[in-house]
Image (cartoon, rainbow, N blue to C red):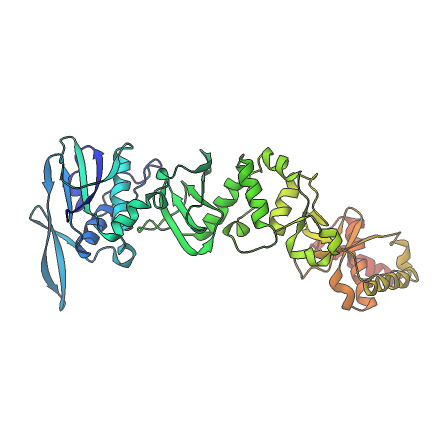
Length: 430
């Protein structure tokens, strides 16, 4: 059977030093380039030799040959790489396990080709065709290489025609064509892949930090970039897909944990789409009556909080937020309301009644479960968790939040401490 090869062609003649001079990269610091470390071509050649994959490299019409010789070092044998018969300090062990795939060496060779020539081509051929003025790599079409070629859009998103949204500053969103698996591209090249995670879309970003194996260093950067690009999208279909697919849970898809608190604003299209829905924070939906949540989309609190902070007119059941915290207003139990009434009656039978004038009290479930009370703009918000507290403890919390409303002093500040000490001292001296 005739051998087939993957041909990668780019304009210009490659210098043999590109395969031997470690760390030599003229692209470092150039944001328009893919390459960074100056090791890609070296690791690629080492990997192809290590895996016994047949390949050829032509600079113009001249072939650059790669051979090996065995060398013993500290009782271990290494295969030293020779370029055009000249010995180098490189061995076939370079790159390690991160490079033991068909994609890794092709990724480097094709990426470097694109850096040199944006019109570089990649195709299947059955013979070698050196051409003056061009560099050509030929890689044997093994099973792994063939799988890559048939699914090239899963590795280089510039081969994926299903672009749903693109932004010069935030990247691109692609249709997920890989059974919902999670793929993130950097400058068009697959840099993060997790088949165990599900994602609604594939993403391409330009400013992710990568290691020498072109793998994303910091996963938190991905969550941040996803939040930014989803907030800026003007594609109604993307927004509708997000709202409907994320409905009912706060986990399951990568987009559930996207960072919605980025500095980026939601596009106006978000408001147009969201106005057609009603929402409830999914984490707290069980606190409401079934009739209250019927017909509402249950979405993560952090997502709804970000939307509400920009679009106050959205119908989000019970969601309240201040600079001091966020919460959902709920119906309190009879036990709690009775205890609060008793606490206020008890306070009104003391001299404190002159400071407690018809308090406005609302019952809430705080996102931070350690918070039991909050004061804001004359309202006292009490946690539903107080139903297991005694009347005296509830009365003390009411005093604290009431004094916050009167003075405007924040929690854990010296001003508020001084204020409470003054009240106590005045009581003692009287």
